Image (cartoon, rainbow, N blue to C red; front, side, top):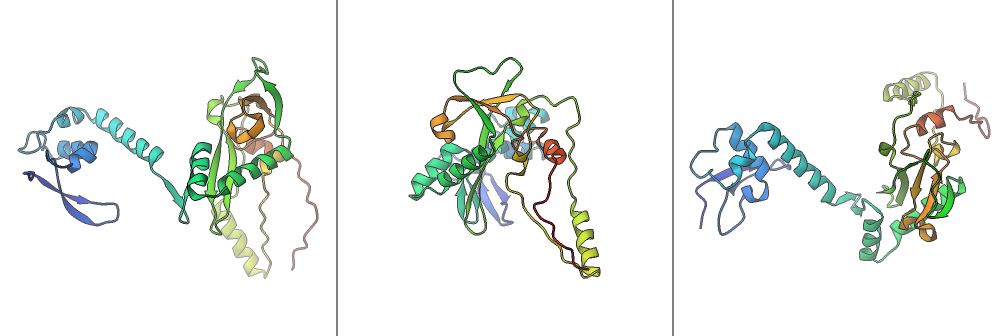
Length: 264
């Protein structure tokens, strides 16, 4: 059974194709994406047109506010559920997905990346372990942490532990930390080129953990912490994700290990 209405769809790739609006025997475009169809029908005054009087379509398009809310919910659902790929590798959103991907691929690449991140964090004495069921006090805010995974261009699997700083209140004092701009880098490179100078760049691993945090926060360790799962851990260092970590790192006294002469 064919539908009396067909719509021309332009896909994200730029290609176009005619699709059924709705059909009893097969799924039409309205069944796959009713929010977008409702918005289109409302903007083009098609809600009462022949073939467009579909169940729930007019209700969905009743108000602009409702349409926008449903559209945002649809986008958010798609963002949270669709798989993410980097350089051909599926990237997990959390620890559980990381373990599932490792099991499916028959390796331990993401598990190794998480273990390396936890080991490095422990090297900086980032957490104070209070054990099971301990309460650090009413002054401490309970937050969450999660692993952010990535795959580099050389297929190296990386993991970074990030604190849920959005769960804390913004400190009364300023947490602003200046960063270099792209324009500044271009000017520096331009001046160096004009004066026949060499430009040196470096990346400091786990830089924020060099400094201590003044925020009073703690977490309950998850499965990524191994034997410490369920322990109460107080965050003592400026863990990435906390609102004041950038400022703590910016103000921390750093002395270079050695000086590098700049050629003239």
